[in-house]
Image (tube, rainbow, N blue to C red):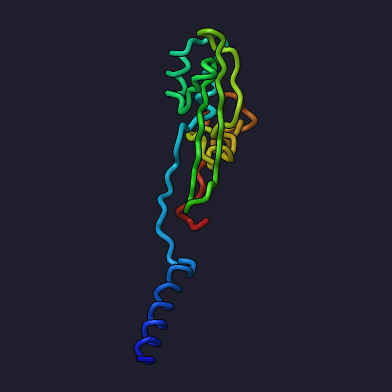
Length: 153
């Protein structure tokens, strides 16, 4: 009898302790950006006096239209990675009647401008690969000077 009671007590303790232990195996959480991605290119299209339909065409349908503030549209963007917010942007557009008055908030950089394009060197102002056959004669024929790639230089 005591052995059965001890076995039931140990088994019940083990089963109940499993409920209280912090779960070290966490479920996979998808990395999904949610909301409206407002870029600098879209913000550059905004002009004071635009109608609501023009703003909707430029920025897209707002994520939040508050029934208590009919002259305000909120564009909200959240990027979560592994359940933690990595990036949060809020962009607000204000109207007076049907015309755009002002806008404010954060937006994403232009996606077409990659870091390589931003750091690309400027083209040369003069072409060093072209030179005159006789530099002292201005009527001299211009020839193309090619690097000696075949010579191993």
